[in-house]
Amino acid sequence: MPDRARIQFLYTGGTLGMVGSPRGLEPGADVRGEIAALLRDSGLDVSSGFSEFHRTIDSSNVTPADWQQMVDHLRRHRDEYDGFVILHGTNTLAHSAAGVSYALTDFGRPVVFTGAQVPFGMAGSDAPGNVLGAVEAVISGAFASVALFFDGVLLAGARATKVSALDMRGFASPHAEPLEWRSVSVREEPDPLARPQGWKNPLPYRGHDIAVITAVPGMSAERFRAMTTPRPSAVIFRTYGAGEGPGEEEGLPEAVGELVSGGTPVVVVSQSLRARVDLGRYAAGEFLRRAGAIGAEDMTFEAVYTKLMFLLSQGVDGQHMEKWLLTDLAGEVSAPRPAR
Image 1: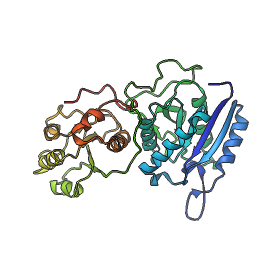
Image 2: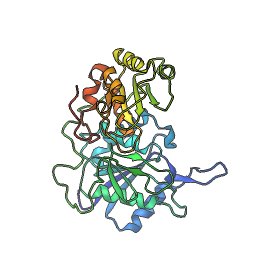
Image 3: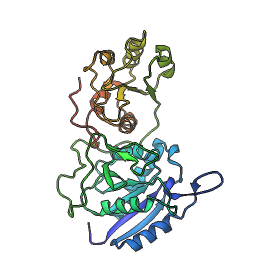
Image 4: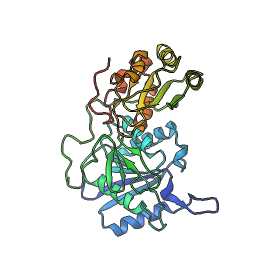
């Protein structure tokens, strides 16, 4: 990076920009002013720009169209800045970081998502520390990819998951170590976030109907069928442990198999925070493997959901979904086993 780094902040909304009201927290803080004062007092040698999203929203309302708006904005302003900080609500922060990661594997600029559990200006706010940490990560020169900074820790953008709405440590990366950047003054090759595959010239995100079903004791095949009628574009089945599910439930293996044979991919993720899905490890997961379901390895739920949305937007069909889902595009999966 040059001596004086040029950074743009993209404010999409979220807790860090909220103020108290009779209705509860709602948007209203002077985020631009807060950041200007923060940078002025920090002593960091940066110049900054500030842009508000096309609509500032609670992140609970973020959609794939919003991910595409972020991607388009970043590509449009790529050559004007050395890096970007995206200010985002925490509820879907990990989804957006993963979604943007898949679409920007060739971007060549650091992009750091951050947010806050407590708004600017409130006692105990973590917003100043998170914003300054994100800026320092961007100007470190240690990477040129998408990451997420929160509570002093930098995580790969497609590896993070939200683990708490109460503690300042709101995010974790269950299967990948935090990124080291503080001790790096000049970016070394290879970039710690870079992956050889990526996706060249991705098509825009489009909305697709992805059904998310959680296995619970006593669930019925009838309920599973009802939740997949009409037939969705893809199904994420949140099962137990390493991918075990209620295979003794009459009709459930057939219901999964009918979806797969009809072209709807069924992807199995674990409800456990730390797990690696292996549908051949236990007999209780074997029925899913026989039915043609895809084990999501050690990807987070956020990474799987956004990757399915990305791949469907690229026109990947059910026949080729396993190959691409298990291909590491943006650092989201650890050395996946070869597809069947």
